Image (cartoon, rainbow, N blue to C red):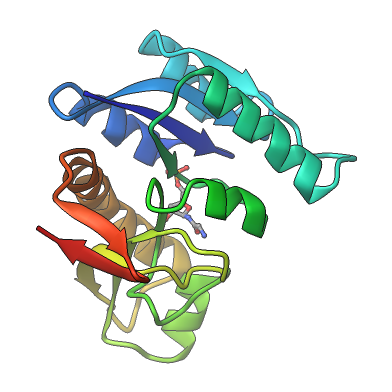
Length: 196
Ligand code: GAR
């Protein structure tokens, strides 16, 4: 079983789905939040998973990332999963976890990187949106995609309604993608997600 650490900043609904699906290929050994008092921490504690709060305020990106890295190494994490973690990680941190660091983003990447995704999808009158799990590389939301799921976008959608529809598929997609990585069925090789 691979030792997985999850980084969060908020509600942690994806963390919840990863906790539920844990057991075969991976176990969650640590949850780190950069924000105190968030619901995701309660979810972890309810599942008896150790938690740490590492606030980012008043620190350089490098020193914040250094603290996270030290906590991950101390816990012997083998895979690091970003689940609603709303900080950009430094190039050094990302390189240190290359091939072992994944993120979920609420769009069909490479479309709609960054923030305000659902607002922009609706403004552009897209018919489809979705979610992507990808390897993290230094460039934001640009890493090779491991798995994607799509949902329809309806003319009457508000950003919140669309976010909820996307979130629903995120909860199925993320555990499946993590399992692929934990089982060694997908690897980051020469900048590509390679499936074996
Ligand atoms: C999810 O929709 C996730 O895709 C998104 O934040 C939400 C977190 O929800 N992540 C990003 O936008 C990353 N750029 P959760 O805390 O309930 O899992």
